[in-house]
Structures are given as structure tokens and as C-alpha cells.
Length: 292
Image (tube, rainbow, N blue to C red; front, side, top):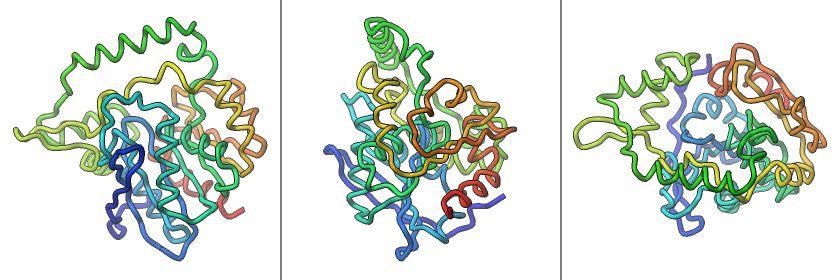
């Protein structure tokens, strides 16, 4: 397995939408630019193993989405796809070089594909790990709008009334990480927990993300809008899906049909975080795709 014994990335900040957002720069200034975009409830350092393997050929950057990692929380925002794409666009402007390669996981894949649809000439290739958004059969897509709105309102009110869950020490938080993904080794779980949590004054730990990022916005992005964006994408796209994941097959449910040039890889013995679960396979297939 590729390890994280690489030079420590530089911690940098930029501004988008009046928010102070954070990203990591893994170096190699003379290489083509690549941006890694993590998923919901995650953080940019979850890419360390991937970045360590790709930084020989790319100048790798990893974004902490608003409300995640070391980026500022956005009180009053709904953490919509459009807001996240705006932040990615701002970071791409800071980086400056075009075209970029984008790699995204889950929500990060949704964001990367949306950016590639909005700015098709700015993107060289996209790798999306279970990043096509909910299928048409999901309640966030098929339910009548009044029901979707009410569900979101009730969920937000519930989050307002809830106290953040804390863990007595780093080991307890890492155990919760492995409970969520049994494929993780103890070393990976501890690394992800170390970078994905903050220590409270009493010594306990709490996850870094804003609890309000848990809600899927009730408007502003649906299957039809995603399809329109995907039709505009000019570059090749590599899709990954874990065969032990809850995510459905985007070819069988029709989400992939809007893409003009893509390949789907179904990965056995892997769940939703397949870039952790089957790291070597993911790197091998990704490196091959990027070299084509």
C-alpha cells in the first residue's frame, strides 16, 4: 500500500463568497495542475495516499470544502452544490493554470463533474468516485417538492437542537472511523481521524465538519440539471463504484448516459471510500487513465 511518508503539504488559504477557505498544496510547481475534492463529512487530508502517488506527475492541490476540514463554516448557507462549485471555481482561479485535472469522491465527484460541465474547456480529465449524485429513485429526487422541502426543514431543525457528538480520546474517534468503514486499517483510520477532528478544552475530540453540511439542499440540483451539466463535459471521465457500497450502478440507473466519453470501473471488495479500500487498484487504474 502507498503510504503517507511524503513531504508534508503546505497549508494555504483563499477567499470565496466572503469565506476563508483552506487547501493543501502538495508541490511540484512545474507539473500540470490537479485538484482533489473530498466528499461530505470528510476533509482534504483523506487524499494523502492518492496525492503522494500522483505528485510525481502533477502539481496536486486538495480543497477543504466550505464547512469541512480547516475551511470556514458558512452560517446561513445551505451548502448546495452550486456553492461548492463556486468555491472550486475560485480555487481554480487562484491556481491559474488551465486545463486542470479533477479527482472527486462522492459529493466531491458531483462538484468536479458540475465544474467540468460549466467550464468544459478548463478541464483536461475527471476521475469521479461514486460522484454522480443521487439516482432518480432517491427520495431527494422523486418525492414531490413540498415533501422534500418539509423533510429538509425538519432535518435542519433537528440538527439545531442536537449537541455535537464527542469522543473521549483519539482512539475512540478512530474506532468510530473504522466502524463507519471496516475496510480501514488502524493506521489509515488514525491518520484520517487526526486530520479530521479538533480537540476540545476537556481533552475530548469532535469532528471538524459543520453539522449543517449533513442536509441535501431541497432545491438547486437534481437529476435533470446534473444531466444537462454532464452533456456539456468535453473531456474523458473515469467513474469508479465500490461493489459493496450503497451507491447504485450509474449505467444501470441511467445517470451515466449523458456523458459522451466515460468508462466505469466496478471495484470488488470496496465500499463507498474505495480509494481507501482498494488504494492500489484505484491508483493503477487512475494513473493508466490519466496517461492515455
